Image (cartoon, rainbow, N blue to C red; front, side):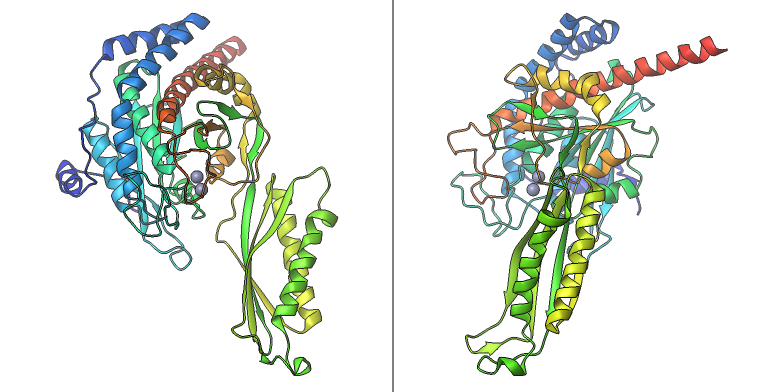
Length: 476
Ligand SMILES: [Zn+2]
Ligand SMILES: [Zn+2]
């Protein structure tokens, strides 16, 4: 993969075809002095007062850019793009970063499996703000939309048929752009580097894994900690939730092709029936979680699509079954996969069919919140920003998220940001629902989570460096 820093001339050309924004994004200089003071006081002090002053400052800054956030989010919402095809979204991000005088690289997340997911990829954007040196931390937002026909009545609904931001990634991208604006205003006071990662292809394409392979976690300065979040319609708006340990599931999907021998429905003894074979496979797969997985372990095996046949009097010669397995550890996920393989092959053999199983190119590991990091300050940041004044500790969910590839490599925190209380339109439809709607009132909270977490993470890393330096000196 080729990464390149965009030259000014390239940027000018690119931005001219970028998505139309009604207003220019606000410049970063406004209130810069006050902001810097709040950061510096916080960095110099351990008191809760200094921490509260910083949060107040960040909150005010986020409220000041509310119109920009709404405008940006609606522009992205009108123009949803599927994984590895996020070209306009990428250009829009680049245009805004350029307005904020933030340098960036693009060309990230090149699609290595175009036979499975169409599109070239390479639309990821990475920007560093701060000293350009370690300590460094990473903030991530995903960018891609889903192949869903939008069924909301908002005037900024998707302009493209069968494409929709039904998972709130337009909101996530906007929140990180808002954070970029505020962090840029703090740049002179930051004691390290904040890496902003605008990541494509979250919806099953493992864009995070591609970016990890391309070096987003190893490029200098090397990030030591990472944070991401997801809007969550089943929580009230403004509530911040998370838990230490596994929060989201490991996930794999499969496609089983059964090859039999077709024929007349009236003469079943002359055919090898892939439908009866498939039905038996589906029932046998239900025993994996009930009979092979410990009752104390979480596991899911769901069949989601079964395709076969064309008429009431013909037994077809083939059938295809799609499904997914989930677990809260990679180890359990791989055990489930072994069992799927065994049951499919042995059942197909029993019925005389031939079975082939295809898995996804990249199964997702579980999204695990580092317990020490969670207790150290992530919990406190969640409480500072949450509507409830405390972080709500939640149960894990069997949904999956490819931020897990970052969390697998460096200590990380992933938050759920409640957004289910909006009334017009209702914002409690589930993720991936054609009537899913983002509660725009939580955009500022997402910005606040990013900025507060980043400043505290850098402070904690600097303190750790100082502690280990003192230990080394004492040992000498
Ligand atoms: Zn999704
Ligand atoms: Zn999502």
